[in-house]
Image (spheres, rainbow, N blue to C red):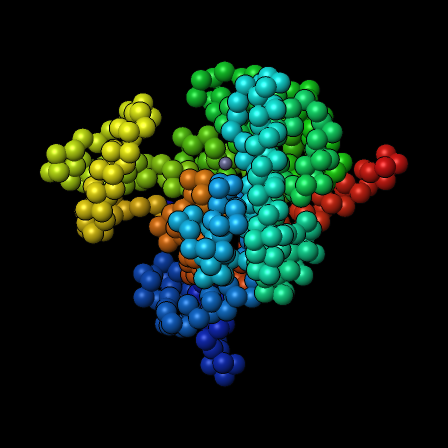
Length: 462
Ligand SMILES: [Zn+2]
């Protein structure tokens, strides 16, 4: 499909040969002419050196050795109480048992606030929401499961905690809206453990325009506001990584231009592969992130990876649900119609929907996925490949957006995390590359951001 795929195949062949050949068996160096047909040959040429079983075992070894880190897992504070929490087998995509099963070492839990009105009341409600989430994450690590998971503030913390076998929690802040107009709260959020923060979510904030402005063509600041510029400096000063997932391209360009420290995209994929998705990053933005020493984490979000493929899959599912609903004498409603229901009608509808879905479940493989396949780990790693090819292996990372809309076939929840490593191994990524993608690149960015903050503080006499 794209030239870089050929490179991936070449390196897979090369690494397979290295793995499988003892020195005595090392073939004589092939001349370029005889190598060429191997590259363009069908897969039959590839697995001869390493069996599927050997490849999976090698991938498992890599997965166990590297620190696997997911930069974006949303939370609902109702799941952070003493009687309902992540030590249990909850329906959420991230729980401690699922992290253990999938070998996911580090989860960045998100202090997310949806965009509301830019008023004192709006800011107060947003602040209360943020504090509720900080408190919930603190409860998990200090009261609910202190023996299983510990919070990290630095890359050193992550390495130390992961070495003990415990899981690691970190905190990212999605939307700086809760700061209100009080820039001193940047330091407060740092002290509460936040180590990255985005200046906007969906909808323009007091700091920055959002990517969602593209739909209407309406902008509030044409990038950053004056307050947004101050926030960039303040985040540099205290050592919070600036997250450029969600703000507009113009806001991101201005942010990267201004920032003295590397930035990150905590959960955004490559827009070149699906230009309709304004949540993804254009090549221009990805290159600016590279030049700034930052990192972009591809996100396993179906609609962002391949919106057409995802829409076709949803349409096939809807057709099946509609057929079943009609047979049962029910009527499927649109999301807008569902939201308009009163509580009693909603309960009735939810019960009907549960019946419909139960009847649909055994037919999904044949009647939905076989007709219109779901977006999967292969599609996800296509974005990683694209980003690595464009900006280099040192500037790309991995994220799920679990419990916030993320999840794809093959990486539906934290328990399936190994499948991402397996696909990377299939594409020929080395142990070192995979370690970088999963965490080492982000550790470099975290260290740089912390060091630059110290320099700024020292220069300011703080
Ligand atoms: Zn998001």
